[in-house]
Amino acid sequence: MDRQIRASLFDIKLRTRTQMLIPLAVLAAIFLLIPTAHGQTFSVVHTFTGGGDGAQPFAGLTFDRAGNLYGTTHSGGNNGGGTVFKMTAKGSTWLITPLYEFSPQGRGGANPSSGVIFGPDGSLYGTATTGGSGFGTVYKLQPPQNACKTTICYWTQTVLYSFAGGTDGNQPTGNLFFDPAGNIYGTTQAGGTFDYGTVFQLTKSGGNWTESVLYSFASGQDGNGPTDGVIMNSAGNLFGTTPYGGINNCQGGCGTVYELTPSGSGWTEQIIYRFQGKPDAQRAYGGLILDSAGNLYGASYEGGENGGGTAYELSPAGGSWNYAVIYNLTGSENGPYARLAMDSSGNLYGTTLTPSTIFELSPASGSWDYTDLHDLSGNDGDLPRGSVAIDSDGNLYGTTSAGGADQAGTAWKLTP
Image (cartoon, rainbow, N blue to C red; front, side, top):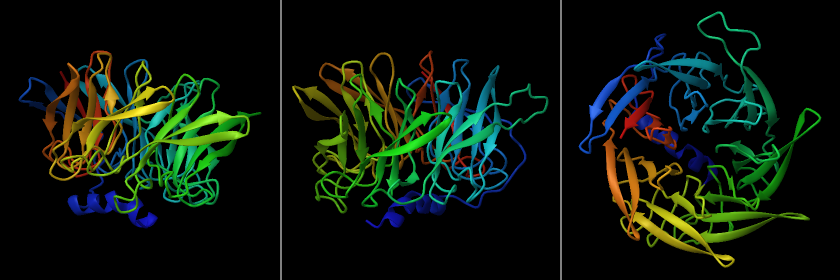
């Protein structure tokens, strides 16, 4: 599939399902409590307006130690290039504060598709899909050095790396990851030696960051166009997914799960699974999570027995990996777009794009039980593209990229 068509696939779908965004100055949270059939309570904690608070949050939310939430919007803001925001609980309400506003084609980047994470220094780190030199950026945000005396105090942005669109990569879309040494890892959807995406590393030295491409995808059996970031196991190996490439049972390939292993001469890629489409999965846009036993879990947007995507597990077995579909989703259109989340009890949580739902998978005597926690109606949100976040009390938080009163997306909470 043409990379421009692939990159814009969901933006086209969003535009056809949403109306023109109406900028508003109101940043107060709008609350809508919806009891579900399973005893949970669903709350819309913010409805994005497309104004200063942003529009179309594509990624999930991140907690700080105080329980505040941080996220990004792909568009909106006063400059139109998206925002980074903070949400703070005040009693039973949540207040949203813009921390940074991107400008289209600005030097700091624009249109972030990934969320933000906290680095070892307490700063926020993320990627912007466009802008910078024209091909996206990796950035850092730091709070003001002096106490804020106004309602909105923007954070200071520093661009750590601006992609040139060639062999170094193009269109960073997934979340970043820090290793114990403070190095940053991420992926680009395009660029690299063959222009089918990269896995990259940023290393800090003397106050500057240097980018190294660890692997360039070649669009063959190795995969094509990673849209989410990588994770690392205790041995220092990296794992991720590609939605294209691999076995050609699907147009453009069904996608792969890959492992990168460090060696004296660089990094070696090993494909640990190639999706086959209908039998197991295809289009794994979301990345992977890792449990304490070293098992990998992921979800696919399409494929499986019912065509609506799957949740799957990869278990290490003597130098190889055993693949198992743990649940075939029955969605009438498309399944999960984001990676799954796991709670302390080993339950998995995720969302499906169309129809838009929030679900739980619970291990039960060698199988997994599926629970539909909430069906999004459009008024409370639509098209959830980001991962679910879980707080210490087991409450779930997430975003939708469309829906809400202004069709600009929502942030939500689901209480068990």
